[in-house]
Amino acid sequence: MTTVPFLVNPADLVRLYGEVPPFDTFRLRAVNLSWRGPTVTLRVDLSTFPATVPPEWEDAGVDTLQCHFQFVAVEDFALEQWEPPVPSASFTAEPLGRDRRMRVRVRGAGVDLGFTSHESVHVGHVSAFRIAPGGTDGGRHLFRRPLDRRLHETVPGPEEKTFHERI
Image (cartoon, rainbow, N blue to C red; front, side, top):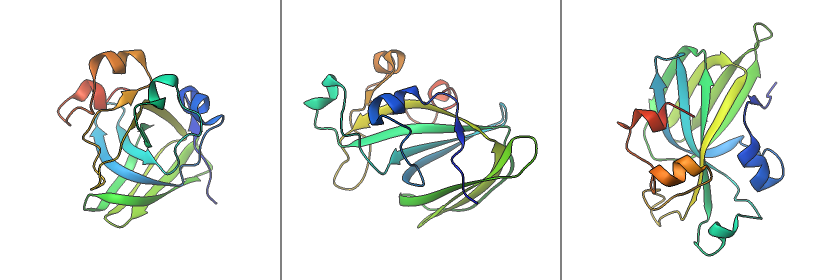
């Protein structure tokens, strides 16, 4: 049985899509592990772009929406394969029937990841960008949140812990 995890703060996605968009498949950009919590954060490009976008995105030529999904109280983490880039990965979440926990699987060409976590998932760092011909996302990102907009024009490197570990 596959279920959609409970998104703690889906407001940015709902404003863009009118509802929580499907994320059963996505382009996986990064996997960030943090001992705080412990947590796992996935940076992903969603498979669909919103039909209606904010005015500041309209003339920017953006075509891809990216966000971070953060899973908390992670246990049983297993990264069996990680060979980026991962252009398409499937996401499944299966409730475990106890303590509001779920089993998460992310699989695709270049990735095989699994872990258990709390059923609540935080969403953050929602941005839009124009995907490069090679599929990279290193260009300018237009972030939804004012603090992200003020601090970042691109996705910071993995050493920027305050960005990658805090949603």
